[in-house]
Image (cartoon, rainbow, N blue to C red; front, side, top):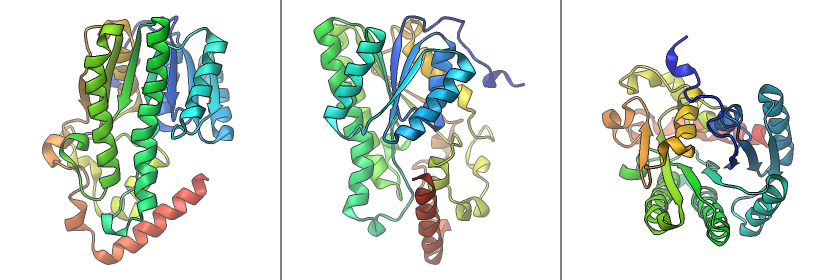
Length: 296
């Protein structure tokens, strides 16, 4: 088994911490939550669908034996975020970590988007991240609690990318927030960092970004200099490190973990405009809508 698929930190590295992971019921959020639990952290996960959260809590507890709880929460709603924080503090005593992971994204020519579709992505990614960061920041400053925030951004937050414009705008905002709060709130013992992942296959998000029509037309591995997509444990290792005291001198930074993809390709999805004929967009759109309905 390759070393990069194995846990990195020593046992108990996150013991005594309570970490809130938004969008923690599936995908990379679930993988990070699992590793946090294995390292001894208490974990709170939240997502809009209670049934999904309850299932994830049950699975993660069974796999790790760790302390985990989940709440239904739409991170776009500040009052719901405050309620999750209140419940989490009542259960675990305090919260001292946040992973802004909740996201929405799909691939589409921008002229095909409605303003509502644009709003949905920006509100979940940017508004959700600042709602959680602001609510917890106020709580930490008032209670004099040292804490760490990790936001999941993307490589095209720096350079932009065609065909995922709402996501590019939102992630760029999260990147700016990360750097800004790292400076402003560092004096309170609060650290803000981010991770910019490349392709890490996940059910749901992966299907919306790389529908079968695209996957049939290209080999994604050819876009990545190291010749493969990422393993979830690799990202979980990095996230756990940034949430731990081992990274105590890292603040306001963004670490890219993509096998060199963005160096090779620039804007991650810009290439599709030259490869995908107009007629195929109808099939892609139908495929994405079908995946979204299945998810509901």
